[in-house]
View 1 (cartoon, rainbow, N blue to C red):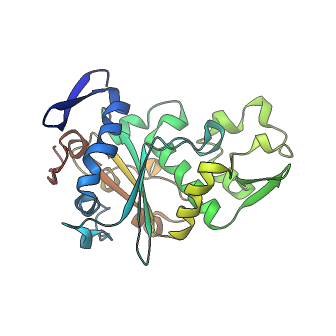
View 2: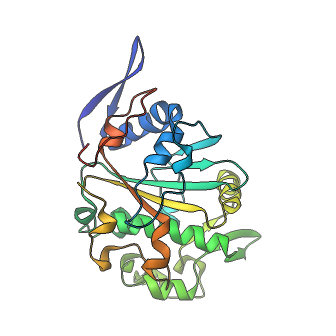
Length: 258
């Protein structure tokens, strides 16, 4: 997307949203705060999986919206956004957006970090490593660091990272995907830890139906050595129309065609 999209902010002000990044910033900070409950209730999970947020429809749950998170190019990438939902059983929803591509088309890219499958896997890897406390201390700083078991699972798909000539010494921490737990990253991870296994990963793509119901097994997000039947409850989808059509105060539930 390289076009300028004008979106309403107030009766006298518009936002000029250039590119996918500009539109997502508008959505996250202007449109979404007015209808978080409906947005969560609209998430479409794979066939046979109930939406755990259905009860939030027409509500305004206490929540925190994050945009442009950064977990490092040599760590776990940069989510387009996330929503932390407070309560007795807090939850986190990561958002990954491909406004101009279908799920399958995105997966044809050569750069693992740019494919929707790779992005979902990186966020899942971060979440699971932190939940299971796969932490290492280097020079007095604590890192989330990938394990040998995880490396074995993802090495082929994430080959540009793992097979780089500079990363063949496994005794060097730079040979592993890792993230320093400091400052703002630590604050976010502290919230993520409260969610335990109530963490979800949403793909927003230019598909006409939920890609998790139709894509080949090779394109599904790999969750370690886990089986898709067990992990699919964590993955959901929305059509790009849900983003493109959102304005402050809107709570439309758009069809898969937008």
